[in-house]
Length: 367
Image (cartoon, rainbow, N blue to C red; front, side, top):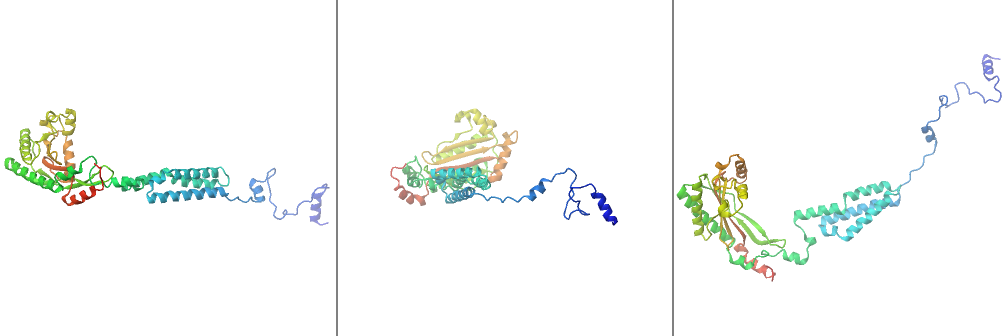
């Protein structure tokens, strides 16, 4: 017996009935495991056949599809400017149907993922969100056509102003007449004050024409005229000198058919509460005010005249100076001194008179 056989016999002696020992080196592909160890879950799971993933059910796809279609409908309505349609019963009902479909998909295990995506789409594009965007777009553009009746569209083209007799507009001074009257009056005031006080003048800004609203949601054919202003280069700070200047101006404007000047800044003359006077003009005492403001008009005509004196010598804390510097940066007007301005509301240009009368014929009973 060879040595190998003798050694093998020693190992197997007294092992009747036991399984044979493995060959030297162990079985091919065998793994050693620690005593008492158990197979890892990975080993077990890898040994089991993989369960195939179940595809999303039809309910999930339906929820995603209807949410996308609803978003496209909302966006199309937004582009078309149909603000009224967005808040209609049909659109709100459609949104409820979409929400119901999404909720049903979320309660389905196989449709939950697509339902969640559909929910995100609906949160981003819904009646409230898109409706708000449409309202902002409509407000910015002034396009409210989708919400107006034929009668409302007709009314908003009214050429005059609601509550004002169109015949009064035709009988009062035209835009051109107001402009000419303002220029003549300014020239006479400048001549008078230059002769008496030696003031020199500078023109401030340009004429401005702003369309007047007609009271029916549209613009009339009338405009508000604001003249270019005239200002003295020299300051006017002495109290007595201010009174003399305003008195001279009052004489000139009455010669042009206006009423005598009226003081807004004088509590005695205006009757305005002294606290309000102090807030508007820097003090309730004309002797220490930063601003004097006098006014007159040619009622029942449209012309309104303003004469304003700004005085930096009554500005103890520099607040008024800062305001005047900001105004100077915008308009180029002098920081202080006298300033003259004319405003005329609801005036009609001579060039538009014939068209105004023609268009009025389509509005019997309007006023």
